[in-house]
Length: 110
Image (cartoon, rainbow, N blue to C red):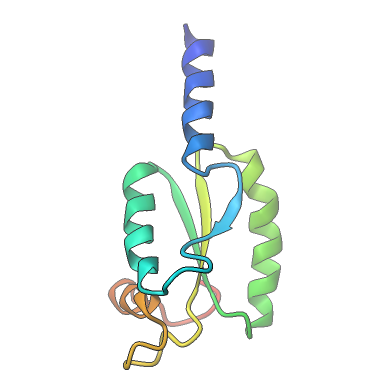
């Protein structure tokens, strides 16, 4: 029974995007980032979110480590959010501006 339960959990987690390191709202309207973030946090008990800028070299190092960790920890979903332009109050960062403000993101990577 315990083994069946574990396998069911693994299948459920994989269906929710666990086991991989993915970008939220990639290729979509940036306003979808906040909505997708909140949906992911509701669906997963454990969520690691990397707020990054493509122009920050230390973010690349963290990307590499999270890429390796994601398949080893199926119980946790690993995602990244590009906050490039999120410091622009006119909405340059779209939904990421809202998240950066509400979560108090000040330093990259976070």
